[in-house]
Image (cartoon, rainbow, N blue to C red; front, side):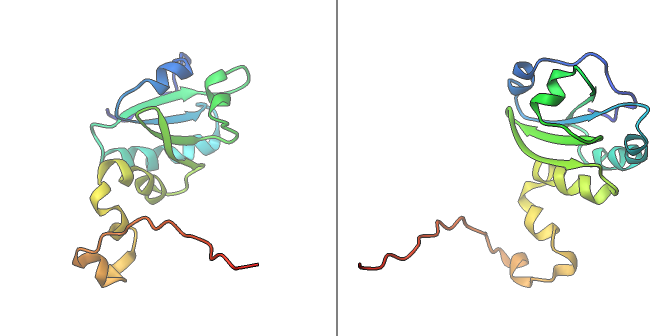
Length: 143
């Protein structure tokens, strides 16, 4: 979905957000907020890399339950959801890169790790290395 310029006063319920399939980027803020206004060019630029990403731009403030359910405290707050689960957020972004890094988990997950390392700093990442999750175990000592 393309960039949306104005915040919507009408917001879905949390249950509706949680039921959305696939990836969704939610932006919480208000039109008059200077931090929100300053971030708009960064958000628009970052969204160009993910034209098929669902984007919701929702007005937040006192009495707005959806923002409270996500524990939004500062504007703008961008929350990336996948199949009803939050997978990341950026609060008060000051660059396109911050938002692009968040969206990279959605738009380009296969190169997320190597793309986050500037200048090919670790050549072994470019040679097919696949990171694995390691379950750490604490050593046991006899008493």
